Length: 348
Image 1: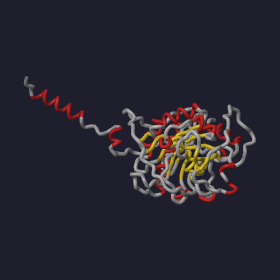
Image 2 (image 1 turned 30 degrees about the vertical axis):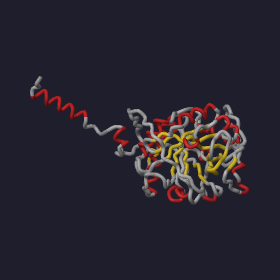
Image 3 (image 1 turned 90 degrees about the vertical axis):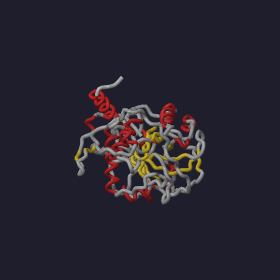
Image 4 (image 1 turned 120 degrees about the vertical axis):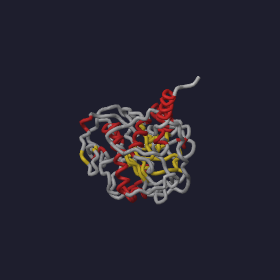
């Protein structure tokens, strides 16, 4: 059968139109970038890609030469009225500032908020490379916890809790298309064990902040009782991204990412960082954000002068029942009473 010229031209035009699109998630994974905004959250329609996270290299642990590390979180949603926007110089809308005592407690609170308290287990962790921190030893802190990723493999969460894991930071996402393959299982089982847990995102400097925020939001549930989301910002020698951005660009990208997460989860994100990255980019910045500081060779006050902090990661070589191999160890700054009050403040 022979087609006339007109129908043939029509069919040819339709075929070409179906092959011309370059938008959507496929374009993002091909390396194309989108504009960074804080006013919208784009949810890709394509299935979530199953992608592994890059290897983390081992090596000697020190504050001056920290090993490549992973890290992020999520939380409940308060009334929208709590987020009065102010105008930044760059023209971005930024959520209103929270009281500083909700970010970094300095003294035990005098009034305890009502609500069910979770049991606090004393820490029974070991350490393959113990450090003598002197009078400011992490062991003097009341509330200990861990952070984990796929590299811990299968975890016995109930046993880990009884060893002193009262909270856990669980690796969720990396960049704009990597999902930790153990995240969903760890997220579910940590909750079943009664551990306060949150998700963290390892920030990739060669991808736009808006895309990374969308990816985190797409994969991390918004659940009442979860800890705030965490942005992990640091240098990673093993990363395929070799760019070293200016301080101004680093701060702008972080602000875009954190604004999106705060609007979605209703909690101000926590910033995790290491001493070298902090010195280059974060000293004196984000005074109203809670900080989670890596300091495995000295107290945070020596590595991060004048910086208030909520969590301290004091070891990357922890040992515990319930986990094969090493695990990162952390403490909360404050007493058990401070801990419960801080948790109540995150859900108010």
